[in-house]
Length: 162
Length: 404
Image (cartoon, rainbow over all chains, first blue to last red; front, side, top):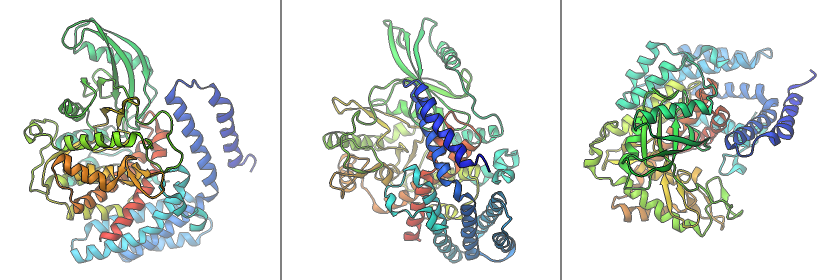
C-alpha cells in the first residue's frame, strides 16, 4: 500500500519536528510540552506498529492461560474455547481478538470476586499472580520507549515475547 | 474494539448506583465520583480561551470581595497532569481592606474529568488546615460547583520556587527521580522529613473539626478499608477491561488492612516534585498538590516517599536515594526522631501494596478513560503517563507473589 502507515507517520513526525516546532512560541510552555509529547507518541506508535496484531494475539494467549488456571467450566470454559478457536483462525482481526479477550477477563474477574472459601481464594490468587507475569512483561516491553522503567536493561525486547 | 461493549463510556443510573452500593466511600468522595459518572457521557474538554477564565475568575472574586480590584498578567501555567492552571496578579486592597497591593495568584480548575477525580472543597480545607504547619500557598476562594467558571475551581496564592534545580547538577546518577545534586540534598532532606513529621502529627482536635473528611478511628480497620473501596470503585468506574491481578490485590488489601494506631493527615502524594524550593537558599517555600489528602495511616506517605519511581541512585551507582534526597533507612530513622511516631515495617509493606494498587488504578484505569473520552486539556500527557501504570502493575505483581 502506498503510502504505507510507516511512511505517513514518518512524514507527520518530520513536519511537526522541522516545521511546526520552530513556529511554536517557546514561551508557551504548555504548547511546547504537548508538541514534544505528540512527537514522542507518534514515534512510539511508529516503532510499535509492526507488532500490533502479534501483540493482540499474545495478549489473548496470555489471557487464555490465566483463565484456564482459574476455571475451565461454565462461561469461562466457553470463552476459552472461543479464544482458542480465534488463535487458529488467520483471518481474525485485531479488534475481534480484543473483544474476546475483554469478555474473558471480565468473566475471570467476576469468578474471582465470587469465591468466598478462604483456601480456594488463596489458591486462585496464587494462580492469578503467577499467570499474570507474561502479560505484565509484555505490557512493560510495549511501554519501554516511554522511559519510565527504573532499570530498562532488565526489560525484554518486545520481539522476544511474541 | 473494546469500546463497543464498554458500558463505562455512557453509564446508566443502574450501573452508577450498583458501583456506589458495592464500594462505600467517604461522603465527599462519593459526591465527586458520582458527579463524574453522571457527566461521563457528556462532552469532552474543548479549548477554553484564556479570556473565558479571566472573566470567570473576575466573577468569582467579585462574589467574595468588593468591586475595587483588577486582574493583570493572566497566563497559562504549566505543571501537573491533573488540573488546568492560570497564573495572574490581583490588584486589590487585600482581604483586610488595607493598602493597595498586587498579589500573585493561581486559578486551579478541574477539566471535565481528571486523572484523579478529587474535591476542591477538601483541597481548600486541608490547605487552610496546613497554614502555619508547613509552607503552603494561601487559599483565597473556591468555586465548588463551577458556578462562575466552566468547572469547579479554587484560587490560591502563587508560591515562588522551583521543583528541580535550574541546572542538572550531575550526569552520573541513574533512575528517573529528581536529581537535586549532592550540595542541595541534605538541606532539602531535613526539611522534607520535618514537614512530613509535622503533617502527620497535627493535633487530633484540629482533625476532628474538618467538615469535608469523614473521621478515622484509632483501633479500627474501617477507615483503611474505606480507602481501598475508594480505589476499587474508581477501578470499576474507569477501567477499559478487567485485570484479575488487580482484583487479587484489592482482596488482599481488604483482608490484611492494619488496625489504625494513630490518625494523621496523609498528603497522598508526598514526594520530590510536589514541593517548591528557593534555589539560592535551599528553603522549601511551598507544599503543593493536596488533592489526595486523607485522614489515615502515616505509612501511606512514608511508603510513597521511598518508592522507586521518585528516587534514583547516587553518584556511587549503589546508594538508592529516596526522592533523590537520602537513603531510605536514614529517612525512616530521622522521621521517627522528628515525629515521635514509630515506623512499622509490616505497615510499610502493606502501604507499598496499597500505593502500587492505587497507582495502577490511576494509570491503567483513569488515565486511559479520560484520554479515551477526551476529557482533559492535555490528553496526550495523560495517555503518555498511563504507560507508567505498566511498570507499577509489574511491581505490584512481584510484591503479591512474595506475600501471598
